Image (cartoon, rainbow, N blue to C red; front, side):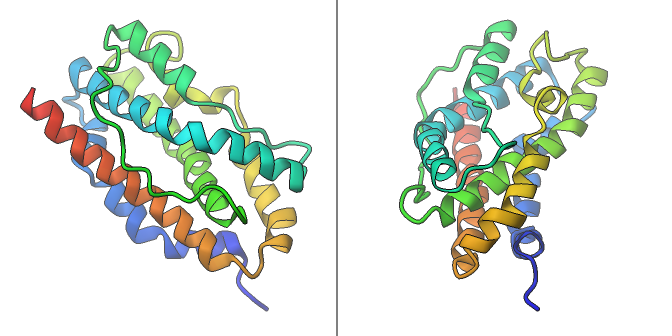
Length: 204
């Protein structure tokens, strides 16, 4: 019996996942010495990333749902949350850096599924970050941390896992390698973007 795709994703994306967690901007996010300025820089970088990503991700996900309907899963756009957090903290994105989007989100849907695995899975880490932001900077979903508190009103990770393990796994059982490639590419693309943003932030 073949290994479930969710287990394969966890195992085969672990190196890229751990590398992203060690990226200096994200690592600083969980520091007890995190400042509001540093947090604002991270928000700006994530806003730039999602603005580019979601221009492709949202229509591609809608098309995937048309082909493989699911009663529970819906993608919740992150850009409005990040833009609002930036406004609340007074750190509107300068928009000077666009991330190098290498993801192929059209076509069969396999790469898209991998990307969604990364994006939806990140909400679980967001739980710990949200708690840390509340303790360190006194921020909550209404004062500049709505992006990291998305789990409070959106259960998309549970719905996505169910969708992936049933309908999608049946229809993409021959595309598991591409799904994993899409996930790893999402991790590495965000990592590269944050590295570039850090160089920009350190030099301005």
